[in-house]
Length: 100
View 1 (tube, rainbow, N blue to C red):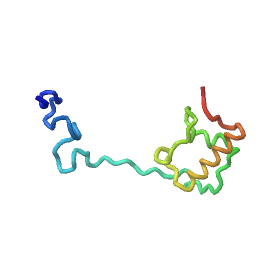
View 2 (view 1 turned 180 degrees about the vertical axis):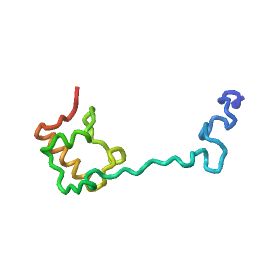
View 3 (view 1 turned 120 degrees about the horizontal axis):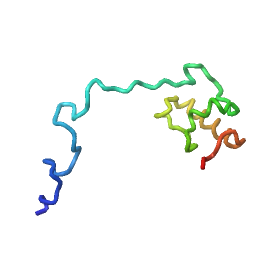
View 4 (view 1 turned 90 degrees about the vertical axis):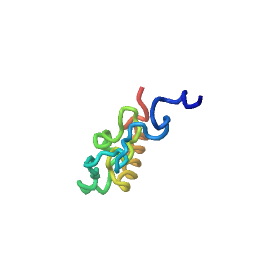
Protein backbone atom coordinates (compact mmCIF):
# COMPACT_ATOMS: atom_id res chain seq x y z
CA UNK A 1 0.00 0.00 0.00
CA UNK A 2 2.79 2.43 0.83
CA UNK A 3 4.32 1.77 -2.60
CA UNK A 4 1.16 3.03 -4.29
CA UNK A 5 1.52 6.45 -2.69
CA UNK A 6 5.03 7.03 -3.95
CA UNK A 7 5.75 8.96 -7.08
CA UNK A 8 5.89 7.15 -10.37
CA UNK A 9 9.69 7.12 -10.50
CA UNK A 10 11.35 3.69 -10.57
CA UNK A 11 13.66 4.68 -7.71
CA UNK A 12 10.69 5.28 -5.44
CA UNK A 13 11.21 9.03 -5.23
CA UNK A 14 14.60 8.77 -3.55
CA UNK A 15 17.96 10.09 -4.67
CA UNK A 16 18.66 12.17 -7.75
CA UNK A 17 15.65 11.85 -9.98
CA UNK A 18 17.17 12.97 -13.25
CA UNK A 19 20.61 11.38 -12.93
CA UNK A 20 21.40 8.83 -15.60
CA UNK A 21 23.01 5.53 -14.72
CA UNK A 22 26.34 6.35 -16.29
CA UNK A 23 29.93 6.11 -15.15
CA UNK A 24 30.13 9.78 -14.21
CA UNK A 25 26.88 9.76 -12.19
CA UNK A 26 24.92 11.91 -14.61
CA UNK A 27 27.50 14.70 -14.74
CA UNK A 28 28.31 16.20 -18.11
CA UNK A 29 31.88 15.76 -19.19
CA UNK A 30 33.80 18.55 -20.77
CA UNK A 31 31.74 21.23 -19.04
CA UNK A 32 33.85 23.17 -16.58
CA UNK A 33 33.71 26.63 -15.16
CA UNK A 34 36.66 28.88 -15.81
CA UNK A 35 38.49 29.88 -12.65
CA UNK A 36 37.87 33.49 -11.69
CA UNK A 37 40.89 35.75 -11.38
CA UNK A 38 41.22 38.34 -8.64
CA UNK A 39 40.79 41.81 -10.10
CA UNK A 40 43.00 43.39 -7.47
CA UNK A 41 45.83 40.88 -7.91
CA UNK A 42 45.97 41.41 -11.67
CA UNK A 43 46.08 45.19 -11.21
CA UNK A 44 48.58 44.80 -8.32
CA UNK A 45 46.48 46.82 -5.88
CA UNK A 46 47.94 46.92 -2.37
CA UNK A 47 45.44 49.22 -0.69
CA UNK A 48 41.71 49.28 -1.41
CA UNK A 49 40.64 52.86 -0.81
CA UNK A 50 37.32 53.23 1.01
CA UNK A 51 36.89 56.75 -0.43
CA UNK A 52 36.73 55.41 -3.99
CA UNK A 53 33.02 54.51 -4.10
CA UNK A 54 33.06 53.85 -7.85
CA UNK A 55 35.54 51.02 -7.36
CA UNK A 56 33.52 49.51 -4.48
CA UNK A 57 30.09 49.66 -6.17
CA UNK A 58 30.47 46.51 -8.33
CA UNK A 59 30.98 44.48 -5.15
CA UNK A 60 27.79 45.78 -3.51
CA UNK A 61 24.60 44.80 -5.40
CA UNK A 62 21.18 46.46 -5.13
CA UNK A 63 20.38 44.80 -1.81
CA UNK A 64 23.58 46.41 -0.41
CA UNK A 65 25.08 43.10 0.70
CA UNK A 66 28.77 42.45 0.18
CA UNK A 67 29.30 39.89 -2.60
CA UNK A 68 30.98 36.67 -1.45
CA UNK A 69 34.31 35.51 -2.84
CA UNK A 70 32.87 32.67 -4.87
CA UNK A 71 30.73 35.09 -6.86
CA UNK A 72 33.02 38.11 -7.11
CA UNK A 73 36.17 36.09 -7.84
CA UNK A 74 38.34 38.08 -5.43
CA UNK A 75 41.09 36.28 -3.51
CA UNK A 76 40.81 35.85 0.27
CA UNK A 77 43.30 38.57 1.17
CA UNK A 78 41.65 41.18 -1.04
CA UNK A 79 38.16 40.08 0.05
CA UNK A 80 39.06 40.95 3.64
CA UNK A 81 40.45 44.33 2.59
CA UNK A 82 37.41 44.94 0.37
CA UNK A 83 35.07 44.10 3.23
CA UNK A 84 36.81 46.58 5.52
CA UNK A 85 36.75 49.29 2.84
CA UNK A 86 33.02 48.79 2.19
CA UNK A 87 32.23 48.96 5.91
CA UNK A 88 34.27 52.17 6.28
CA UNK A 89 32.57 53.70 3.24
CA UNK A 90 29.18 52.86 4.75
CA UNK A 91 30.21 54.51 8.00
CA UNK A 92 30.97 57.75 6.13
CA UNK A 93 27.73 57.46 4.10
CA UNK A 94 29.58 56.94 0.82
CA UNK A 95 27.75 53.63 0.33
CA UNK A 96 24.27 52.69 1.56
CA UNK A 97 23.68 50.17 4.34
CA UNK A 98 20.44 49.12 2.67
CA UNK A 99 18.09 50.22 -0.09
CA UNK A 100 14.36 50.83 0.01
